Image (cartoon, rainbow, N blue to C red; front, side):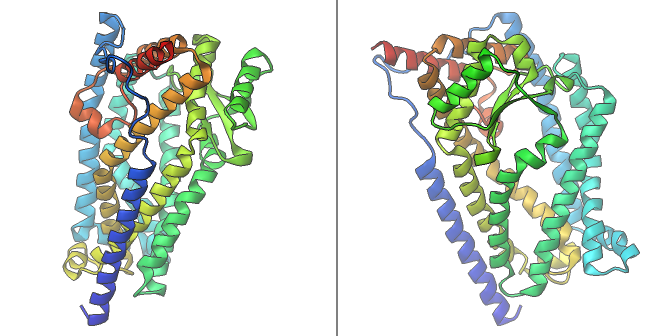
Amino acid sequence: MRRGGRSGARTALAVALLLGVAALLVVVLRTPWDVLPVPPGGRTAPDPTAGLDADQVARAEEFAGALRPASLVSISLGLAASALLGLTRLGARLVQAAGAPLRGRWAGQVLLGVPALVVVGRLVTLPVSAYAEVVRHRYGLSTRGWGLWLRDVAVSLAISAVLTTLVVLAFLWLVRRAPRTWWAWSGLAAATLVVVGSFLYPVVIEPAFNRFEPLPAGELRSDLLALAEENGTPVQDVLVSDASRRTTALNAYVSGFGSTRRVVVYDTLLDRLPDAEIEAIVAHELGHVANDDVLTGTLMGALGAGAATALLGWLLSWAPLLRRAGAEAPGDPRVVPLLLLLVSVGGLLGTPLQNLVSRQIEARADVHALDLTRDPEAFIAMQRRLSTTNLGDPDPPAAWHWYFGSHPTAAQRIALAQDWQRLEEG
């Protein structure tokens, strides 16, 4: 590597470290580590059963036990396929062969090679996904026919392929346009993409899978709009998602910013939960809005994306790694399989930290819901109903929850509500 290349690589590494430290500072300063004061007598010890009967707990544990191995197999197969394509010349040959109809030009190799790589990766894990769908059908959680399942797979695959292709095309264009400073421009573009994606997701991606209709006028709609007003975060509408076409699961969420912000409730909620419990769920989601959790997540994601891209600038300056992948330079389209592998590995390594932050943010939103509704009984009943209907394991293995758990367990959330109630009672 020439002296200029070594200098650029060192700069990229330094920037990656700087942005990584900045992201960690945001994590430390913006994560709510203590969401509730300790009540007199100490915190309530979580009941591992979350107050469910033995049959309900056993069913949830059996369901989780059937899906956990499939999740691990899917991750392992995906990573193995990505490593095979990214660390051998096989992936480079696939990209070149895919680009042949467009005369092998670099842009043509990206436009046809990236979708080919995405399709291969999805096909590798498709049997495991089908098995998981069989399990969800067996336990009554999925209502999809196989035609709709295949349609969802195809739509998800198409969206992934298009977005990945556009990102990689822009990435390689920057690499070829600014061979010494591409990593800086790419990092800025990646951070911007995270921010823009947060705004566009509810109006571009969500409608690809569900239809939304305004919740009819009535007491529940009025109460939810009033709840948002009381929260200081008015919403534009309350929509009902046709989730029952796919699942019996219960859920609600708030998405969008400003003019796109709306409360969305699954139609399954309207059939199965009393209004007080629906309001408890929506109040939790409004807690995320009140605490700017989406903004915080976007900031963390933008800094993380910038740091990861700068780190790529250092890694892709390593000639032996490029040769192993069958590429000659960072701007060579044959580097794409290696690039996708590095992104996948980075995502897996960052998952525990992301979920640690997520669990704390979700706990704070639970406290916010309790403060807003002043109804711990409805909150606790809602948590138990969600566990029963969604088949959530109320007390999963600690290691599994540490890595995969994005929310506190049902047992922990109910214990938190009981602590809140004790504090309120004095």
